[in-house]
Length: 262
Image (tube, rainbow, N blue to C red; front, top):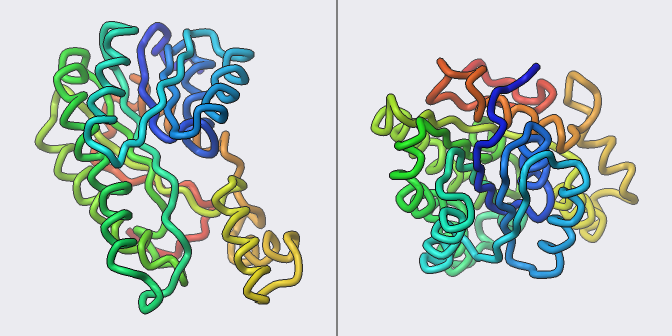
């Protein structure tokens, strides 16, 4: 299906790897000009080089830490300088560390708040005028943990809920010019999930990596964890005109893992 977004411009944060990269790849293969973002210069350069192999639009990388306000301003301004506008904003931020509540320090709460929630606030504030001019879209990549809390992920369970509340509010305040949605990835084969499995190995909860994958897959009706590209394709759809009557929704991409009715 042609998503009819060729020539558009998308800024995707946290896209030097993982789900952000998968989203950028799906958009780039539709002919969208994409801006990759990350904090690690070398990793970002590799991501840009890799994506150029399959992209049909232009690809650039901009280093920035989206938990820092001045970096967000720089990121949006550089995108506009390069492409003249922004049609799509996709927010993706790596998950905070896996911890229990009583193990989590106050400074870790502040860091998670700045990284997970305030990054979305600031990016939206900076990009809003450009998105509004173009009838643009915002897609927030959060986590299935906003539907059902996940053991030992107290920061993600708590702070990402704020992103969902913000998304719903913005879907009304920014309408009809800008559509705002969220995707809620479940267990997906990314560095984040690999890290969580390795932490379980270190704690002695499991013996090896494959046991970890099997354990995560056990309660998934599709009997496997997801692939990053499966999430990326949903993001691309939400950015496209094919989803022109979809706004204010949070779509689980979890293989049926969540048992929530809503």
